[in-house]
Length: 128
Image (cartoon, rainbow, N blue to C red):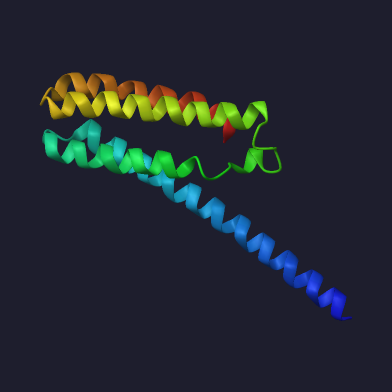
């Protein structure tokens, strides 16, 4: 009986930790979505930079999690590497948009921000 209880507790802890990772990833994705919305609408360079900073941090944090579709895949699998490459591409584009915002080139920044949506759409098809 004791072994069954220990097994059940272990399973519950494992399931709880998996749910926590999923919740963290979901939170990161919500932060990215909200930040992109700000970037597309704002006419204030500082507000854009703040949103981009939050987006970059969320993308970096998302690299610590694994989407449900990739659960159980080894960290060195081609799919997980592709997931990380997608996030790296997103981060590089965020940095590019941020440099334009710092130079107060908001129209150019908004044009470049459209590529963030493209990166998102491509990767959602693969990993969502």
